[in-house]
Amino acid sequence: MGRLENKVAVVTGGASGIGEKIVDLFSEEGAMVIAADINDVGLEKANQKNNVTGIKLDVSSDQDWEALVAEADMRFGKIDILINNAGISSEKPFKDINLDDWQKMLAINGYGPFAGIKHVAPYMAKSKKGSIVNISSYTALIGQGFNQYSASKGAVRAFSKAATTTFGRSGVRVNALFPGVIEKPMTQSLSESKEILNQLVQATPLQRLGKPEDIAQAALFLASDESSYITGAELVIDGGFAAQ
Image (cartoon, rainbow, N blue to C red; front, side, top):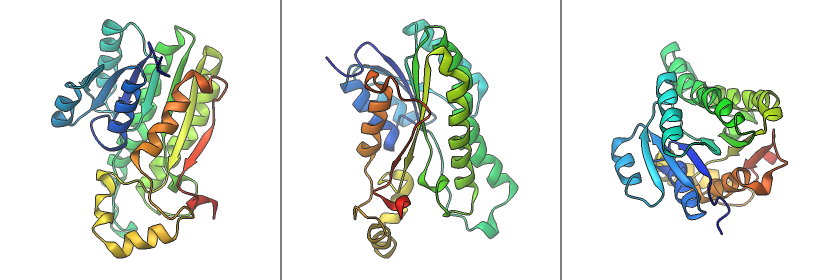
């Protein structure tokens, strides 16, 4: 029996990168998975997988979240797991960042997972159980990244704790993952610069970049019943970078 047998999971940003790896792993472990994304091509691919349903979702839209919960309720009658993974990044230097940049980043990376919890946690609470995993970033823990990306991931860290205390008595667990630099489409530009790539590897105690499966395996543990007494936890997955 799989570790997520008979569970229903929603994974935002589930059409590519870390999200796609989580979708595939959860499906292999027995879950019925909703891959939620704005990427139409990726959603078509998701819909061809076993036990996976692709649903279009703009995470910053309350209307989209309401529609997703209604669809999940109609199809499966429950949501056991929510992985708030969808996000965007930016390489703009701080002197060039403007209010529009800030608001776009916070809308997707900040309000997106907040909205997911806002709409899904009360639905989970009806059955007195559920696991929510928010994907933050190691930049929320250290003095790196004076920009809107770090701010958005710091917001995720803060409201993950608040959601823990808000929904814990309803049986809903909320935990957060803090990935370091992970090999994925969003960080593909790093691999094109051997100098930057080498600097990152040399600065990491484990001497390599992370892989999407590193994050997916941690998400699997926190989503499963194996972590049934864990909530409000922060798990850093950065090869030891933030420990320095």
